[in-house]
Length: 147
Picture 1 (tube, rainbow, N blue to C red):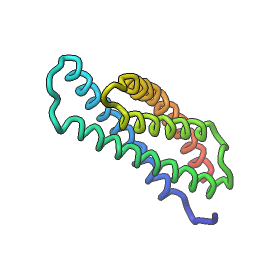
Picture 2: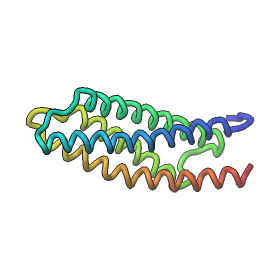
Picture 3: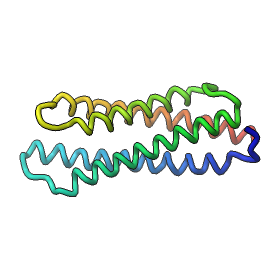
């Protein structure tokens, strides 16, 4: 692909990553509130679960957008994928986000084990987001030094 500049693509990626991190923070807060209300056996507000699901859906969309940007931008700039550790970190985050979202849709009734999968996945996602942020910063620095 011979595009004049990928700077516009990296700007979209930077905003998407920032919003993904913000969404993760909001999900941690709303998830903690859901957990707290379940533990205290008090009724949770209707908006809480809806907010958690809505923010989670937005995060899935942002991560899939980042995946698309990463594939297009990397192939367009380097001609192939897998030139850095960011490739594995990015795919790890995509898988963790999809497992988290999928498990969230299965939490109900007698499937208490699914909640553990959801929470455990989100703890791993914290580490994955740190890893992908670090490797992404390295890619940005490499890209800027080539420009």
